[in-house]
Length: 128
Image 1 (cartoon, one colour):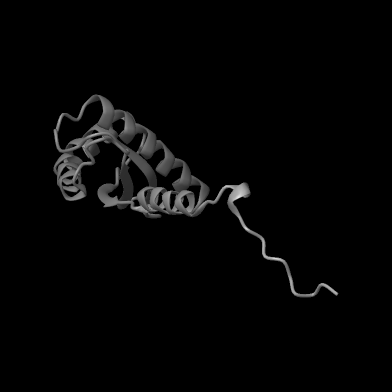
Image 2 (cartoon, rainbow, N blue to C red):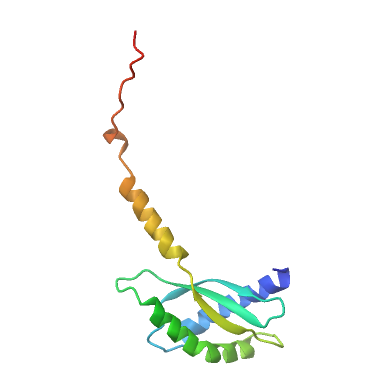
């Protein structure tokens, strides 16, 4: 990705996060994090990777995805008004599972963690 498309991707990510928090009222879209945006070099498409924030009631990813796809046209029109671009990319939302996989990995590591005083060291048979 060139510096220009990286800059545009970051502008889109920041503006989408603001729009989702402030203007989108679809109840299927709860609190979520936009983890990254990948923009095509010709600005025709933008892949928007999202992950729900950990909460007591974890949302169904399929419902969140449906809400985001439903709001894509609205979000694209709002981006066209706020970003200085001739062509605003078509938004394609994708669920990013990396945060939940990271949480699961950390939980597994915490379960396997043993306090230093609990480890038994066996004496070797090499004593003379």
